[in-house]
Length: 394
Image 1 (cartoon, helix red, strand yellow):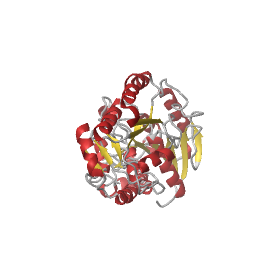
Image 2 (tube, rainbow, N blue to C red):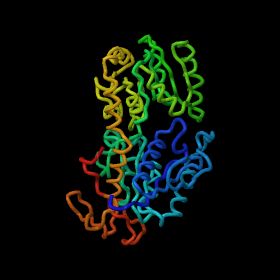
Image 3 (cartoon, rainbow, N blue to C red):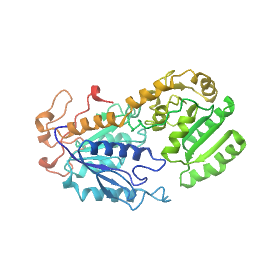
Image 4 (spheres, one colour):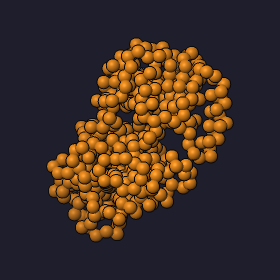
């Protein structure tokens, strides 16, 4: 970019940045902040007080809510985060919000562009109306083609695959015969299916998974998962929730990683973490996973536990060195940041660059918004955001 930008990165208050263990959104925010700071941008991150991030840090809560055991309504804390951003709005050129649907509210009341990355599912009852009425100053970003496909009529500012710093991922040339499962203790993640696949294949399984604090999550853990774990005996080992270094070593030592859930992953950080360690992934063909995993190259897809157990016998023929090398290039933090810098540049482009063209956008000086009148004068309306062109989408 031609000059350093003053960028506000707004993270949810649920996990620290970066998370000590589980927390996909916060890991991505950390990688983006770190790389933007390295490139000379003036980055202010709104995150929990126990976060450890480069650049300026504004604490939104004293410590991350989930690790602290908070199980109540998170919306009041999201509102406090918004107020903290609004109190400092004159200090930024652009805001990048990771607050999911709350981001649309922020864009309606600020005079600068807002980029909103959605990290969760978009096939939700309120999604169509919310996205259709998004204000002109809001640049909507999806993290996969599959996630964006739930709303084909939305003019996305970009589709940006998540990226991580993967160069230090451990790689073990000599591995055991065991499998691993990393994620959450939840039915949609396929944790019981992972146990069944281990039984069918005759391979040991190690599970590194967090247990959510909500009553239904605790009930599932106590009444469903624990009995299944006990029934599996010594073939399955539950490690609990582990930190990143332990998780990476688990991947590196494993024959294959299992992702057998029916959950339509908006992206799938677990997959790129495993592949960076040279560990193939065996999974269902759901969500964005086909955008990450190349069939017969990085792993295999199966429609049910029997097919996935069968595909495990094919994993030994895959080139683990090539798997690791490819994913480190395809899903690096550098590539992700390149894409976001392009989105920022487009959002901040001057009126001459935002004249109505083949994209059908109105001139910035008109003050027109997709969501109707926001109560601001034309001079303070954020500029319409043009879509990131396909050639620059990562």
